Length: 230
Image (cartoon, rainbow, N blue to C red; front, top):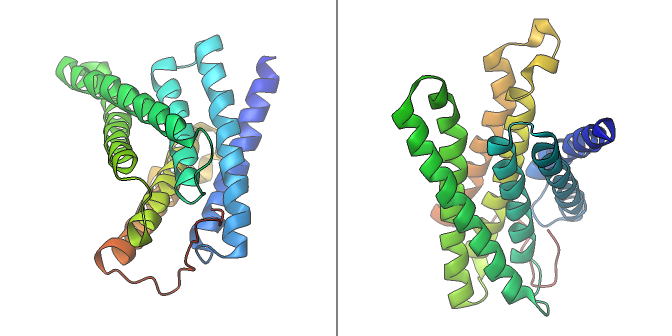
């Protein structure tokens, strides 16, 4: 059972990273982006569930892996809902996801500050705690704004979809290239080299957010209609 769980987690995670990177550079809203985006969503949900079960049942770093699993699932689901038309039950689901994000975010932020205060070995856990805490609170606050103001339009809608999908990919890339650095052959087990794909995701995310929200240029981005997929 342990081997099966790990196999599912690794296969789904690898598929998610591959499709995520391709979708990241495909024309936004185009056929390739939509198809790969859906594969990415399913792969990330599968690896998040498998990873969460491994952490909870087998006790594999649950304080880190459980928040990672929950936040990954939260990000891809809310990103998908952003570009899908409302459906029966979508509002209660959005409220439930917002509460999950705020709860996980608040707990992890508290753990992060505690880890910094304790110092020593505990300080090494501060970064993931603070990262998941910040993303959870920011995501939950954004959800509240959307729930109160109903559907987003234009650049705000695209930006919400972009950063959530990109950050889910960032978590997956960080977990694989940095968290599992030991599985890489020793000649390429170089921290700056392994960190490069992770940084690429962040740089690309900020570039698209700059294009969409600051420059307000949608050239090269196919408009996402209310009935279109990722």
